[in-house]
Image 1 (cartoon, rainbow, N blue to C red):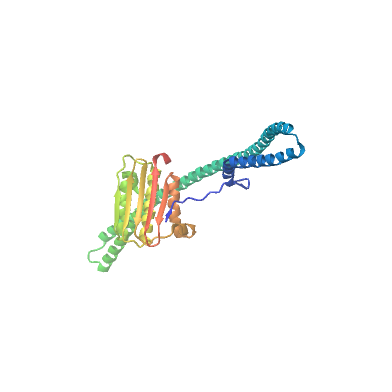
Image 2: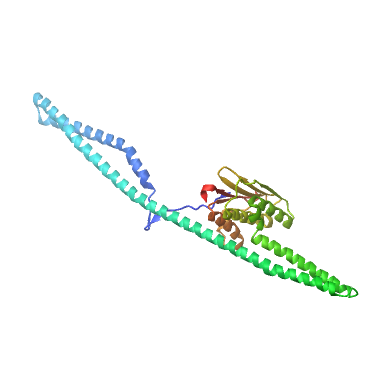
Length: 342
């Protein structure tokens, strides 16, 4: 099942729903007009000829007068049919004018609604951009705090332990040296974990080497972390993307890989990032258990937030996100961005 985060939109203005039958109603009347007028003409002509001949035969016994009356009858037929055709066409014209007037009103309402939806979309996109920017600023701040405070504190602790180890007499209890070594090992592990957290909060490789290299590095990190093979194929871009776009793609890849590793129960995971004439496309695909995107996205529980956040990240930079997944058939997450969409 393919899901592109699109919703059915019903256009409503002033509590009045646009009548979808109006265009078809006007077309039907136009199509049926020749037939209706022809039938009306045939009916009038048949009735006129049938009754006028019998009426003349009854009230005019003279043949000469009867032939003259036939001439007047013909002119009368022309006049009567002309008047009736005018009335019929006038009625049809008025009905069509009423339909077109209603269509004009509905089209104006539709245009106002579309304008409002476009304004709401722009506002929602700007809001998503601000939220993403605020999140990245906060992530960078936390990364700096961890590096400057916690990281430096751990480094100072490790340095003091090494000094203490040198100050102890060589004939001190061996257990003391073992305990110091254990503490140093714990500090080294904590320092490594802090570096990992800092890298997840704000990857410096993205700023230093660009998106393609950052995605390769991300795939290697997840492969080492979960001890699971990940195939990574990334094109080297002709030119650097806007920083907000690069960060959006990186976060989508990070979230999609995390979902694949934690929840998909996949044997194979593939990450591809390719450039095309219009823009770039990122695909994360696995052969795991899959899911129904529509059902999952209707839930409000925490595990479904990741998918929704990926959508908002791509929306914020003018990109698109689609998810293709079925139960037992794996999942494919596709993020696209085009130059003119920014």
